[in-house]
Image 1 (cartoon, rainbow, N blue to C red):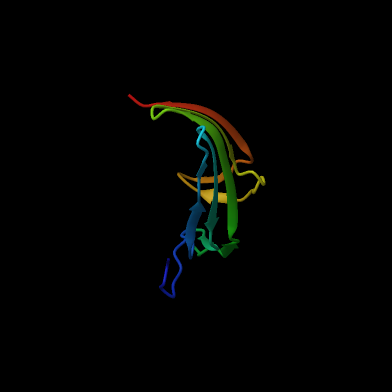
Image 2 (cartoon, rainbow, N blue to C red):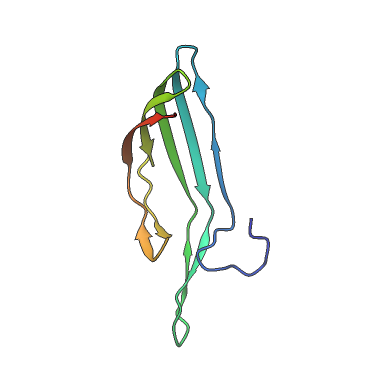
Length: 110
């Protein structure tokens, strides 16, 4: 959490993630997660100084559902950004947060 009175460009005032997992005796699991990014300030660098822009807080909800087979193999389907939240994020240049994504995965431990 940023506790100073001055804000730094693109650094949120707070950020957090909360999640859990239910694993059934037969190996099926459900794993929801919610991420929250607090409001942040965007300063454009220039001469003369450009105006500041306030970016609102947003929340991203993810869900992973799958099946574990023993201790070594997991197969899952994952929905990222389920409610299709759209905002601008800063990561190696300005980018739009992608909309809803679906992934399929297999994890094999040796």
